[in-house]
Length: 207
Image (cartoon, rainbow, N blue to C red):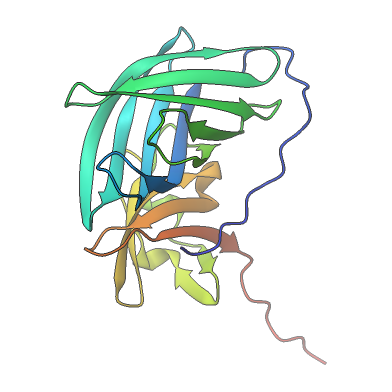
């Protein structure tokens, strides 16, 4: 997997239950659901309604194929910066999660708590609506690669598609368009990516 630079998380300072609105997420690791451990990665976007309800969509790369699932569920957020939530996918299966969020609710570091599930998860607040204008004038870095925003296709639900070398990726826009969390969408082992907007190149000075 490509390395992910995770942000720092604040110490307990949550005086209110700030987890509401939309978040993009990335979850990766191994699963033993089918017996032997296998790598798995997923991205998605969920909305917490502020009243204990949640809904969204996820894409999972498992056994070499990208699978899409709608999600519905419930959540609880506490003033000690912890949260728990569960989602039911369209097959009727429930998935359970727990995590800790920053005092402003902008980031949630989490894990899936089901016995056979991956443990590495991160959520970042996502815009309520997205359009191509959010990325087209930006440049993004992933390792040594730089991608112009104009090469990224953006859907209105804040999902995005782009290419790195020979690999295609499916991602979700977060942090006001400054980052995109993604997984590889063409067949093959799960691979994650995190695009981070970089400053525009500076113009040479004049004497």
